[in-house]
Length: 178
Image (tube, rainbow, N blue to C red; front, side):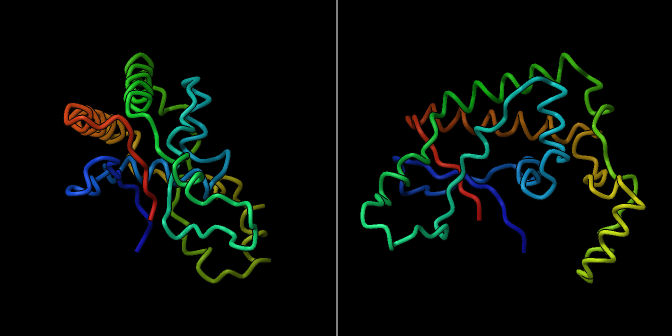
C-alpha cells in the first residue's frame, strides 16, 4: 500500500480527515522519488510557480528526536498547519497557469517506457548500468495525469473541497501524508 495525502481539519474533530484527490496526491508525492526530474519540479519551472506549500506535510509517525531536551514537539506540530486561503490562492494560481499554457505538459520530460521492473531486483550495479544506457529511465513514466487533463480535474476538485471547508469555518488545515 502506498502513501497518500489527506486533509486534517483543525477545528472539527467530528469529521477528522477529508480526502485529497488521489491523482493530485500521486502528483505531489513524486517530488521525493524523482527530485528535479519529477513532474512537479519540471512543471514548477515550466509554469514559473512555487508549489512547495504542498510539501508542508505532517505525518504522525515522523518521530521527533526525544534526546533533545529543548525540542518542543507541540510547536513543531503546530507549524504544520497551513492557512486555507494560502492553499486556495496557490491552487487558483496553478489552475490559471495551466489554463494559460494549455500545452505545458508537452515540455515535461518523461520516461517513454515503463521499466520499473528493472528496479525490483535492487542490484545496484545493474541499475546504474541501466540508467547510463537509458538516461530517460531517471524520469517518471507517462501515466496520463498531465496529458489527459486528470491533473486539472484534481485541482478543481481540491479547490472545491477547500472552499467548502472554508465555508464551514475552518481557517487552517494540515496536509497529512501517510
